[in-house]
Image (cartoon, rainbow, N blue to C red):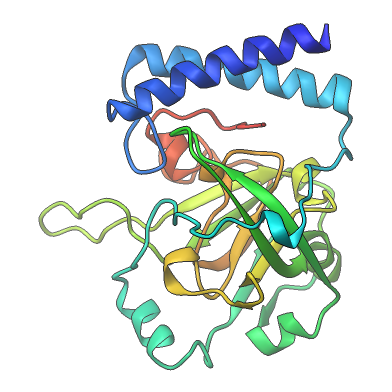
Length: 261
């Protein structure tokens, strides 16, 4: 049964990759085509059931060796946020950056990069799989998201972790402010051992194209779930009030919320 499920997953991903090549799906484009949406829905159902029932909630994504690291790691999604506050932080080396943690928590907090780096860290060499069909292997270091959540004291009603980011993927309509990127994951994913807020990439601080100063790595899901330029973490019981109510920027544009690999 496992081999059969994996074969079907490969077929679906192959179709998505082909459509991505036509500009109908991918980390840098929309997914408004009805066929793409149906394929995404099938993939979401299949991978969620496979990972939950067969792999288990705590199974690890494969980790690689230093020799496996890709010579070039293609940046996904936004690459140069134009938000003025972000640009000011970047110009000063993110010295004044503060990660906000709030929502359904007992102890809201703000953390500097130095404070985040002082927390227990995890380093992992993993493969990044993009819905467009490409993959790269990189080395990521950061603080486990579960550590941040435990320090904040999550309230019982909480169900999701939302990441509010500095990039604004869409151009603003006349007279309107551009909407900032946001994404979300559930607590099973948030507390996974390999889910980290990465501040280093391949042994050096993150650079802007890869999400500086802080990006999410949730290794058992596709790349579009790995929010970059994270400015605020909000713990919520529902994401219906955010964006168009689907749980993230890409989800508001037709992608599925769960994107397991």
